[in-house]
Length: 454
Ligand SMILES: NC(=O)c1ccc[n+]([C@@H]2O[C@H](COP(=O)([O-])OP(=O)(O)OC[C@H]3O[C@@H](n4cnc5c(N)ncnc54)[C@H](O)[C@@H]3O)[C@@H](O)[C@H]2O)c1
Image 1: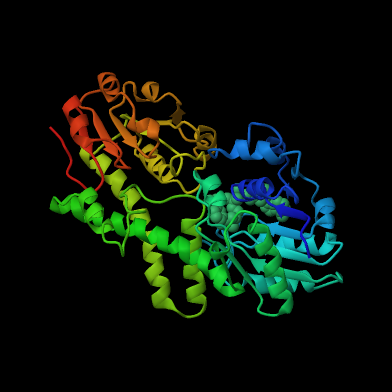
Image 2 (image 1 turned 90 degrees about the horizontal axis):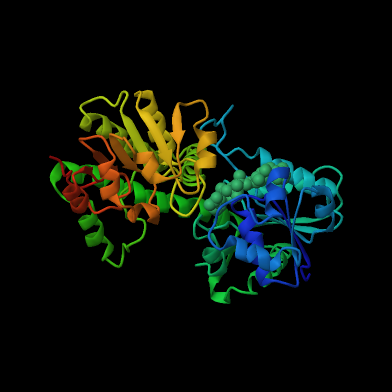
């Protein structure tokens, strides 16, 4: 089958950018992204996109109205589709069995039911969302139960983009992974999806596997990445006790080609909507199969991440003479990482909440995430101020929580001049030069290296 009509359910951080790049690279295919959220769809139709992602608007503008469309009409669009990508959210369950660990597959299940109900021909259904291993089996059962006469071939095609670099990741992926059944219809569907990606991805980067390897590989990729962050953060705690310097240790180990340099910056910890939920999901699956030692092993990656955030707040309190009550503390950064407005699972949320509990007067600044911060910190007595210089005026302490380039380039002399003294700076991302700030007059507390205090 030559694919002419692609529909994607879910216009979020994955569905929007992924489909925009497919539409850009495949002008001969119509791509329609559908979502229940009307505001989101409306925003995709304007130049004020619902998510911040560098270069995304340029790509959208190339294809929107030509072969890229955004719509809330789910029924009509599924009816004309050759392929349906499912790119809805798969958060951690908050209720019932598996609460706090298992993936909530409610939205995926609803999509399967809509596809079964509205399809007007045989379809390929592509799991783009990150899902527990063997979800395709459940999807197939839902799709083929009841009245539909059509055949639905389920493929797994997990997305490896990282927010902040999504467009480059999609245009030049390290690999595209496609998993399917090892029978004739499965292999045929895999070939159809390979053909789409072949429009811009070279064949050696398109990896085809069985469905279960593909589903599991996505969870494992996130678990390995998060594990590196937790590993280096665990060593940062030891550095602070031993006068070793985490930046030096990172560099020394990263020059080992077997280890490599990426994901070795000590910080307040990883965030984002995926790492924590995907590891917890892996842990849940392991426990389900009675693999408790394996589950405990991966669980520790999340425990370590929580510890790093609490340790950061404990250090602030201990340093500021055991109380932050009525002291002004400014958080520079609220997004879970630079170059995104996404705050899901951002370490800043926990840190700000703990500081508010300690009755600090907290100000939060961020170039892209304040709209979201307003929502995350709803009901808390926190001031949001985009201008970092204003936010730091009269502060007793500044904490850097997101590694925005703008925070590396700030005029810290000006900030220091307007702060209460003694002035403290806690660099939760190790982006400033501690010695330079110390010379300005700050007491400086990086992660995993000696504090510079007077
Ligand atoms: N965000 C990332 O960096 C990233 C990277 C790789 C993979 N993933 C995975 O991709 C999936 C989507 O993540 P996201 O960050 O794009 O989520 P998101 O919350 O930004 O977007 C999901 C969208 O799906 C819509 N939706 C939910 N149920 C629907 C339904 N029944 N019909 C129509 N629309 C529906 C929601 O309204 C929402 O707009 C998740 O499984 C995630 O783990 C995310």
